[in-house]
Length: 364
Image (cartoon, rainbow, N blue to C red; front, top):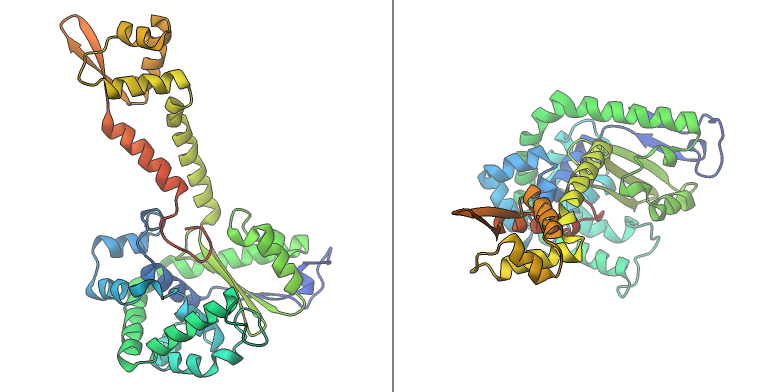
C-alpha cells in the first residue's frame, strides 16, 4: 500500500498533498467492479480494442458473459456502476482481494436499498430533490438495487462477478498487481516532489480536466481521497464521492494509449488530405458519379477546368492513398474509385470522433 498525507510536503499549499487525506494503492475489488461496468455496457469496438481481456471475452464469449450482457443492459436502466458503488459504500473497496466482496455480494443489494439515503452518494448530506440530476440518478440506483435484491437477480450478479474475476485473476496475479503498485508509487513520488497530488495525475486522463481538478481542490479539506490505478481500464476510469470519501480511478496505461491514439490520428489526418482540397474532392466526386464512363486524365482535367498536370498531381495523391485505381485498356489509362478504401477512411473517422456507448467518463 502507498499512502500520502500527514507529513508536510515541500511547497504545501492549496491542493498540495499535505493538505489532503490520500490513499493510493492497487484495488482489485475496484478493478473487478470497473470491469463489470465494461461487460454491462453496450458493445463499443473502440473500447474493446484497448482492453485485451474484453476482446478475449467478446471473441469467444462464455455462457455467463452473454447472459450478463443480456441481463444487465435491459431497458437501459443499469448504470453498470452498481457493484462499484456497493463495494465503496459498504467497505470492500480497499480489500486486497475480491474474495470477501464476492462471498457477501448476494446480500449487498438489500443493504443498499435499506441504507441508500444515508450513504451520502455524490456528496449530498440529504437525499437530493428528485427533480435534480443527482435526484434522478439516486432514484435510478434505488430501482436498480431493488431489482438486484431479488434472490434470483442477486445470485446472477454474484455468479457473473465471480466468473469475471476467474477470467481476470490470472492477468492480475501475473502483471496487474505489480503494474498498479508501480503506478501508485510513481504517483506518490511525483506528488511528494511537487507537493501537489493533482498535478501528478495522468495529464491526458479525464481526472486531470479542469472541472475534475477544481472540484477536488474545493473538496480536499472535507473528504478523504482514494486513488486506484486501474490495470483493467484503458483511457477510462471513474470519479465519485461516497460518505466523505472521493474515489478516483484511472487506467495505468492511459498515457501510453493517448500517444498511440495521437499517432493513429496523425496517420488518419494524412489520409484525410484527400478531402482537404476542393478540386481534389470534386475529382473524387466525378470519378465516383461517372463510374460508368472511362475517364482519362484529360477528361477529368477538362471537367475540373484545370491543367492536365494539375489533375495528374491530384490523381497521384489519391492513388498513393489507395482511393482511386488505374485501369488499363489498350494504351489508355482510366481511373476508378476504390470504394472499400474510401469507406474504411470514413469509418475510421467516424469511430475516432463518435463514442458509441455511454461511459461515466466520456472516454474509453
